[in-house]
Length: 210
Length: 249
Image 1 (cartoon, rainbow over the protein chains, first blue to last red):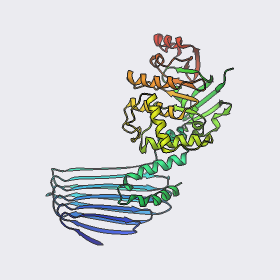
Image 2 (image 1 turned 120 degrees about the horizontal axis):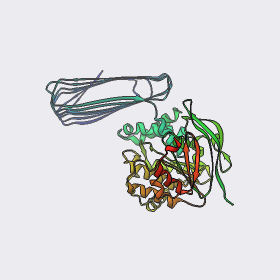
Image 3 (image 1 turned 30 degrees about the horizontal axis):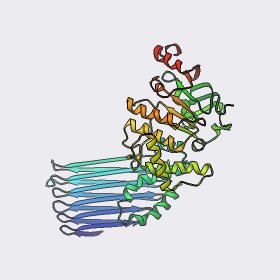
C-alpha cells in the first residue's frame, strides 16, 4: 500500500494508466485538492482510499476501465469524509467487451463531524457483449445530518434507437458504434491532464472493440 | 414524362409476429407530395419504419423500388445514402455527439457514396449557416449534443435542418406536427416547402389535417388496417377532418 499525504492547501493530480495493482491511501489536510485519474485497459485491482483529515478538502476521482477478452478490473473506492465542508466527486465508467468482467465497490462514508459535505458518486457501465459482466455496489454510510450525498449506478448496452437514427443519417453501424462509445467515455478522458496524448490510445482501444 | 421515384407493391410487414401492413400499393413520382392519413394503429409509422429499414420490423411480402433499385435489399445506411430521409416522430438524443460532428459525418458518408470529395470543416459550416438562414433557424444548437435537451419544437426543426443539408430525393415526415405549437409548425412547414423541387418527393404522415394547411399535398391517402383504402386530392383531408375516421375503423 502506498500512503501519501497532501499538505494544507496543496493541489495534486495523480494519474495511473494501466497500473495492474493500485493500492493507494491518501490523507488530505485542510483545503487540499486531490484529482485522481485511473485508466485501465487491462486486468487490474484498484483500492483507492481517501481520508479527509481536515475541513474543506476536495477530491475528484475519474476512473475508466475499457476491457476486452477475459480481462477483469475490480475497483474499490473508499471515500471517507471525516471533517466538514468537504467535496467529493466520483465518476466511474466501465466498458466491457467479450467475456471481460468489471467490479465496482463504492464506499462513501460521512462521519458525524463531517457536516456540510457535498458528495457525489456516479457509476455508468456499458456491456458490449452478452457474455461480459458487471457488478456494482454503492455503499453509503452517512452519520452527519446536514450533508448532500448522491449516488447513481446504471449498466446497459449501446442505445439501439440511437444506432438506427445514425444509420438513417447515412452512418454505417460500425462507425455509429464507435461514435457512441467515444461519446460515452470522453467526459472522463477529457478530464485527464494532457488528454491529447491519450487520443491515440483511445482510438486504438475503440477500434479494438469492433 | 413523369419520373417514377418510389414504387411500393403489395407490401406486407409485421412486428413481433403481428401483421401490420397488409398489402400497400403506392407509386410516387418526382415532384409530388403524398399525405398519408389514418386512425391510430393503421400502420402509418410502420410504413416509414419499413421504408427506412428499421430492424424491428419484418417484411413478409411485396417489393419496394427506389429509382428502380430494390430498396428492401439495402441496409438502412445505404437507403439513406440513396436519398431516403426520415424525419423521426421522436428524434433520438445522442449525448456526447455534437450536432456538427454528427451531421458532417452523415454528409460526408453520403458524398463518399456518390463518389464526391468530403466537405471541409469550413465548407460544411458555411453550408449549415446558409441552410439555417433559409429555414429561419438560430445556430445556437450547433455545439450541443444531438437533440440533447432540445424542446419538442427544436427537435423537429433540427430534423428539417438535417433534411436541408442531406438533400434527400424522398423525405418521409413521420407525424412531424405532433407536439408542435403553431409557430414551430409554420417554420417546419415552410422549410419543407422551400426544399421542394421537381426532382424530389415527400411522404407526409399525419393524423390531423392541420399540417396540410401549410404543406399542400398532391395526393391524400387513407391508411386503415394496413391498407390504403381511399385516395384523393387535398379535399379528402378536409373531409376527414370533418367526418373523422369512423367509416374506416
